[in-house]
Amino acid sequence: MTGAPGRWTRRAALAAGSAALAGAAAPGARAEDLPWRLPKLHEVKVHGHRMAYYEMGESKSQPLVLVHGASGSPPLEWGRVMTPLARQFRVIAPYLIGFGPSDQPDLAYDAETFVDYLGGFLHARVAEGAILAGESLGGWVVAHYAVRQGGRTAWRQDLPPISRLVICDGAVQVQPGQGGGGAQASINDPHTARRAHEFYASLPAADDRKTTQAAGPHVVGQPVSDAQLKAMKTPTLVIWGREDRLLPLEDGRHVAAQIPGARLVVIDDCGHIPSAEQPRAFLGALGGFLGVGLENL
Image 1: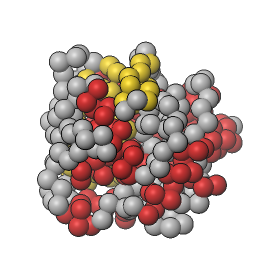
Image 2 (image 1 turned 60 degrees about the vertical axis):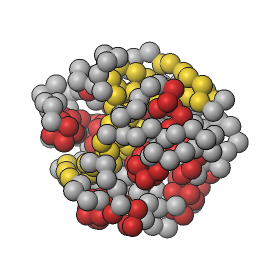
Image 3 (image 1 turned 180 degrees about the vertical axis):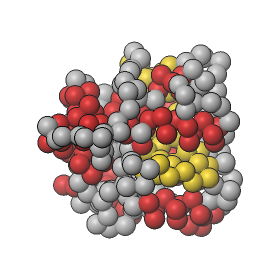
Image 4 (image 1 turned 120 degrees about the horizontal axis):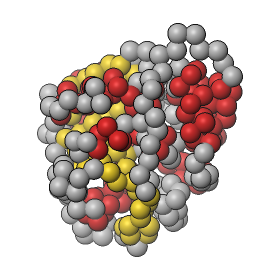
């Protein structure tokens, strides 16, 4: 990831890079058998704009909100774990504002924009006290949300408090020039990359370039500072792929070390998207943090 617009758009690169990996041999591949499964797509109005989302699980269960990264694709990043998670939680996976099929209005697409719309979305879906999880760009968004929770949006609406925070290979403190690359840097295992490409190619296309090009410089220019991390009081889990080629493990160790009481789980044989590449290990880490059995689902 980087502030350079040409290198920030992971969505197109994921498709192209996965296609390149599709023909690669995968002796001893450790990709797992969990399929990508999706419920019906819904939409809701937030601050006058449509936000699309998936939802699974019992309505009375605790909400678990999954925030996608710069791929712009909740299905790609969360589709392998939503069904198992929905047996324990009310799982909600929105398309962030600016990422199709959500509306793509002319906005700043800075941290304030994403937090304000995420807060409005939590209000709209009655998800106060949610467990909030974010991957990559989504990790940056949810970390900023954790800092601002309990405050107010530009619409004078309260930002609902959350109960737990999960940062997965999050772009919390991206350095200029850090990251870049496509699927070959996001999903290390070639067999998983091939399966991801096949699934991704089956989804409706969306042009998110305006959003990702606007957001990229803000991700670099608006990190969540060490002081902000040290002031966090929300119980936090940091999950990181040991072989992440976009954001190195050192980033995850540093972020976890700043947040009081944070738990760090490093997933072996894994790149930038643990929920897609090592879904059972991801579920085990999340279940251990939340005190529920998920790893065998």
